[in-house]
Length: 197
Image 1 (cartoon, rainbow, N blue to C red):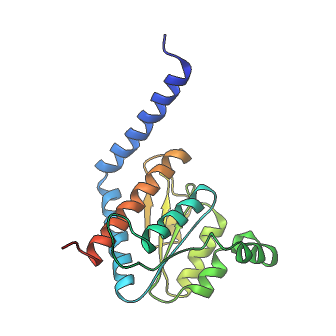
Image 2: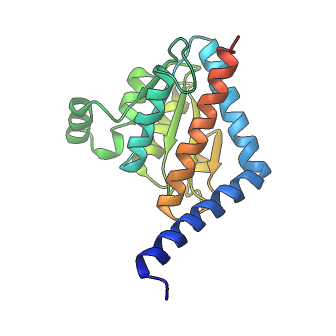
Image 3: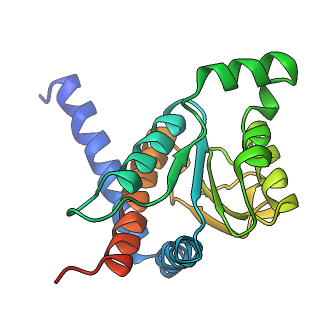
């Protein structure tokens, strides 16, 4: 008889693998990743930057990807202009206290975003009020908008230009595919702007 922990581990790995396989077979998922990479490449070539934000685990993803842009992903090259809006506790607490948590990202987009930049909002549900508010702020400044979310997508499609829907409704699986997709985007940007050899 299989032990309960082993059954749980195998089930989790199989669900993760199934979601990855579904993503790899999805023409829409692949085309959205390509479109997101092209949008970011164009913005960076024009002297723009990429702003990232999310809550909880998605905040960690925002910081992780900004770090890959600024440092490196696959090989040494010049830094890419990526900025996580989740890291400055003075800004987050000041805006949260003075204007409400819904505005912790939108105020930063209004203050730091410029026309032609890209804002990437990450929300597994697609319903995070502070991410949706940041999309609206970005659009008001001419900042391009990209959403990373789950299969349902919440309200994201109504608030941004490009939406990457992960083929899962489970938060941990969505987050796994978000970081994988973001690595792919970063890899495409890196290899296009700084081709090896």
